[in-house]
Length: 195
Image (cartoon, rainbow, N blue to C red; front, side):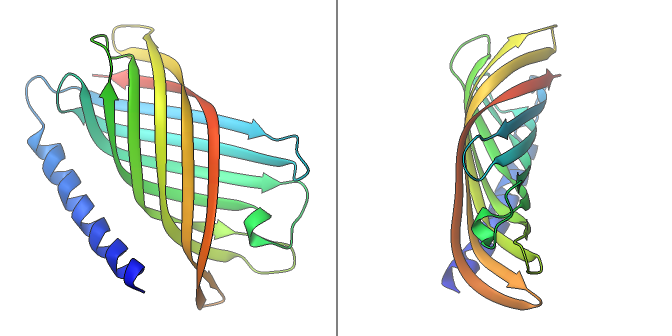
């Protein structure tokens, strides 16, 4: 209960802070950023799990070495081996939150970005039961390398650590507290447009 109140207050403050920084940072030298990341992983373990991860970032440079903006992540997981446990079943989750990128060099092709998503909602499935609506938060840490393809288009790859922390589950209108986490470490292909 306390965590939910904290999360609601924090989410509102982060949205206001994001809008303030986003509007404050606009200047004649600001660059507009659009970045798309994609990852598909098929595990060969017992669960035979596949994961699809789509990461979209829209931001503005606030200095030569920093870019700040909004991040959108949509991830899905499926298991060909059906499970009676929500933790091992299929899920689809949408995550929204601010992202800060730090560049390590003048060319701005080697970066570290941190993304906190206070909005993290979706559904989970298990065999023999209705879907469970879930709510929580997530973080994503990204170490990326992108090389210039043209003056404004960059292509590259990244190594990502992604953690989803679910705190609430709802089935047929009945809400319960849960404490389920999903953690992944994976490479992704990236594309960015820098205007």
